Length: 527
Image (cartoon, rainbow, N blue to C red):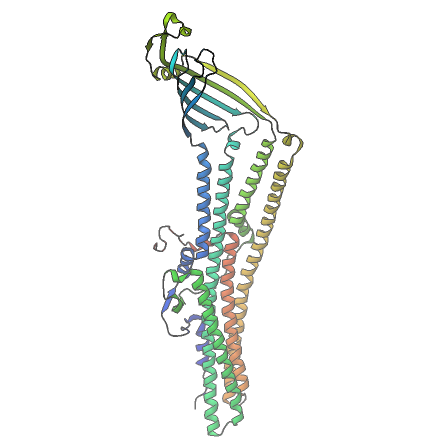
């Protein structure tokens, strides 16, 4: 005749330190917490999409910086005009043909002060059939330097670099947002990992509880056969076995759900095509050590490290800059403009009789090309310059301050959001610290409850031996002990999840785990 023994109680109490068996036959994957976090950071599709955002923002910074790369412009045109002569000196009804070739090149540079500096070389060749020309064909070249500098509106280093500054701030914000997203995924990985630990250990507890119930059922059957127990007493044991079998079905479903969540979070299929059939075996045990938590230190670290707060600070800097830009745009557009240029002309000289072109009698030509015109222009043989001021006052900037008001309100909004973020961080830290402390105390309380439940079951089994108890009480105390074990394990897992939540609230989840980021030395092999 089989009966429960005291050995069954230590067996049930040892559940917390034993790995749970797999739910069903299949290949197992041993997984540590750091490996879980690494796989999540490397493989998660949602995180992979977020990683591209700073790269896009970095490209925008490079694009904005291209504003200060010099530009080169080239042009060429050829024009052939044929028209009736408008001069009475030409023959009646004569047509005049003029062939014009124009070319230009310009090199321009945007200056850090907001101005522009350009150098251009303009040239032409003109060949005409018009009468009485003294130089034909004629070549002309002009070397020109232009300088334009705003003195009020758009003046200054920051105004000229506005696109670059905004792009850089946007890049910084995207990097902080990525850090926040990574902190969130680290927390999710930890939470999913510890919940899988809980679900597997809970399944183990339920199976051990079912084993004890079946042992009691076998004992009852033997006692009924021996005639020492009424047959009706077996119904209680049978009902309890069925209930515990249902509990196992629920616990197995919880394990599968926890595995699926963790597989999806790690995108395990990216590494293993058989991921769907794998059973994840956590190799790390949850911590039960007393926390070293200080509220003031946690708040200080959160204010220093939280990526969302750092992003809010950058956003406020952007709003301040936009306000200064808006105020600058209300100033008149006063510009200093200066030019320096040198022309040159050359060509084939036509010599007329008595140096009189009206005679129409050509006695010789002196051929020449465009080289002399270009040389005269480059040597500044004929120096010309101009200096002036231009003033443009749009009436919209005089009678309307909507742009400034909009930027001012945006800055006020950013400041309020910053204060709200700081308040939220204060609340997050207090809540996280309280959760850690509470869950640690829960572990101690549930440990005592589990020890008492074990003692009650042991005492009730002794009473059953001498006929002072019934199946009902034994089964009840077995359930109480199983529930106490489950609650203690849940408190341990909640404690570890709350620690992860505290690290996330402080913005130091990655730092605490010391997990190499994707692409860093020591990380998983690149695929």
